[in-house]
Amino acid sequence: MGLFGTLAGLFDVVRNTPVMWQEARGNVLRQSLDDTMRRLKNANSHAMHAFYGNIIGTIEEWREAYTAASSSERKAMLEHARKSMIQMWNREDWYSALGLGITCLNIESEQLPGEDAAYVKRETDRIIEEASAFLEKNRNY
Image 1 (cartoon, one colour):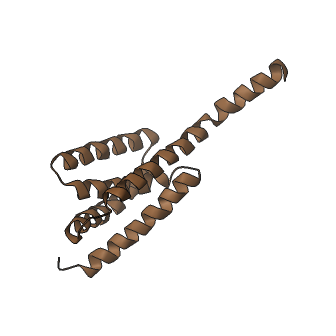
Image 2 (spheres, one colour):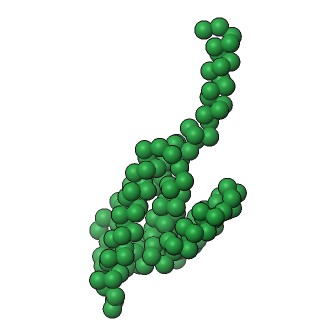
């Protein structure tokens, strides 16, 4: 391979590092989605109302703000959401915390490359549609 080949290979790794990191992040998002769905497995109607209500109550505003934000602003938004989810979880508002998590997974996965991120985007879009239909059906809850 020689010195030139080694240097060229290292250059490719450095050049592709952001993409590789983003694709790895997509895998983390997929694991988070899987964990969220496991936690919802036996949820009752009341719990699903809290879950879906948080999604519908946050998705459009968060999506709009995230899309317009810079990279550092996006990072700050996700950190704020993470802190909010922890606070909700600690006060035993588990299903609202999980709903905010789905909102974050949806908006973040939209900006990432790779199969895992695409999967998370498709699945969270489906969940958002389910949330809308559920809340419409249970409007007088």
